[in-house]
Image (cartoon, rainbow, N blue to C red; front, side, top):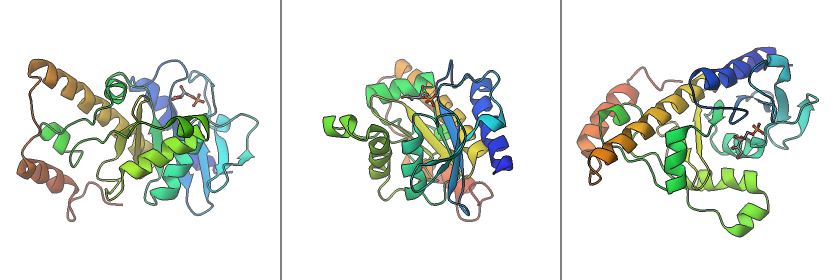
Length: 230
Ligand SMILES: O=C(CO)[C@@H](O)[C@H](O)COP(=O)(O)O
């Protein structure tokens, strides 16, 4: 079932290791087949070393029910499913605990756009979610994590800002497929690192000029640009 997608999702998970975004069994990548309403995701707690396409778990988008695998799906599966239901153009999702993006999440701060390196990829700051309530944490925690992300993106095109830092937790990134989502997670970590270094040099650095932000983002991702086309 969904052999090509399992290959793609497995490779995307292994790319997290190659890109230095995860250690141990941290993190997870999924991809969706919209036609069948099925999601393929990393198994929970399985080491990346030796991870194969046949280890990927297939779950239903609407119910989260495992339809193929003896392994448990990633513990963050419910978050991925909420995001796929809300962000209809998203085809792949990544969660990591990459060092700098997670530091911004722990600091509970959006990552400001301070220069063109950022503006080439993100149209403004990388948002940070609000803190989750005790009720949200003690009930359906993983699904509620997805809900606070969706709430954060009210009125924002998720493909213009393809990542978020979840307060007190870490980053989630997404894209048109699993490979694109990993690419965005790599860029996010670079931008988080760059912002940290910039604020170390000058803690009073403000956001970049709006005109420059638009110029750099839109020439690459605007209506007539190649990047960002589906
Ligand atoms: O963020 C978390 C847990 O908060 C995850 O990244 C885990 O570290 C990986 O869990 P599995 O995907 O292996 O269940």
